[in-house]
Amino acid sequence: MDVEAQLLLKIRRLSEAVWDNRATGRDVDAWLKIFTSNSANETTDRVAMLNLLSNFTYFGVHEVRELLASLYHELYRQPLIQRIRQSLVDPLDIDAIEDSYAAHLKRTRFLGVGNPSESGPHLLYYLRQEADLPSDLFINHFELPGFAGVAGDVDHYVFIDDLCGTGCQACDYSSTVVDTLRRAAPKAQVSYFALIATTDGLRHVLAEGRYTTVACVMELGDDFRCFSERSRFWTGDGASDLKARAKDICLRHGRILYPPHPLGFGEAELAVGFSHNTPDDSLPIFWKRQSAVLPNFRPLFRRYGKLA
Image 1 (tube, helix red, strand yellow):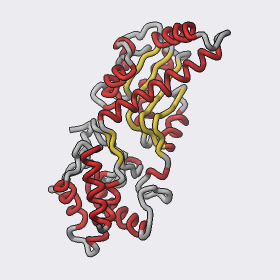
Image 2: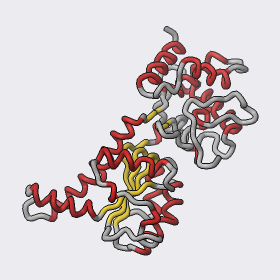
Image 3: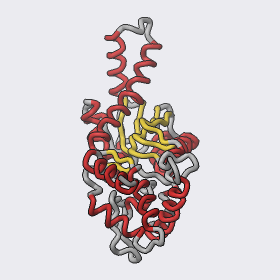
Image 4: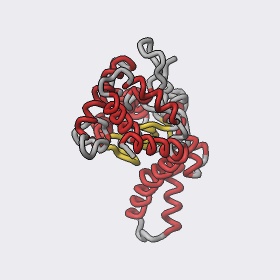
């Protein structure tokens, strides 16, 4: 079996088992033709793009739920339990630990990053179910101190996000909502928890200094960028040439599909998507709808933008 056939088989299995059938054989073939039909090196270019596609990381509903369960237990519950144990005379007193934890939980509120129609708040429904939490622990930002409503006796606010790519969205949000909250409740703890985050994105959010705690469940280093020197996507003989071909194709078509950021927002170069949406930090060739120049282009992991 040649390399192209091996990659097509891998992609078919990924589509069936992980990608919710987002990339059927016909869809992949149509997607490939946009990039390779007029190429003098069609075979090489097909292999380069298929290799890129085969490394796309997709989180379906089941995976998102598992990530949210991990976020709650690893980023919220376990650190709090550890602090409670350290404060007790008997750190093995299970009843005292659980009573103290329940009291802390009642003084916590969970929010999504963004307005109610965006992906952050969208995750709260699943989080409530996976963590078995009461609905009154979830609020909208207008219920925060400093806004129209009042959250009550609360000293910990947890903001949930699906992806922290460049960190710009979390910082933009914090410059308005979190700043207002902090002025009204200066002693409150304010946490930012993302399901997935790049190392650079986390550093950016942390450097802003508006959140008490910044953390994620799964951290993506530079090796998860499609074309970085350390990218894990390209291995074996001829890998550097394939990477160069794929980057050239992505740049060429990205400048048409998403001119401001042909390699993803902030040139993040990611290949990541969720069942509920694909972030614009990922390469536009994965998610951008057709343009006037490419009217027949159909993305395999379409993104639903915030603007019509």
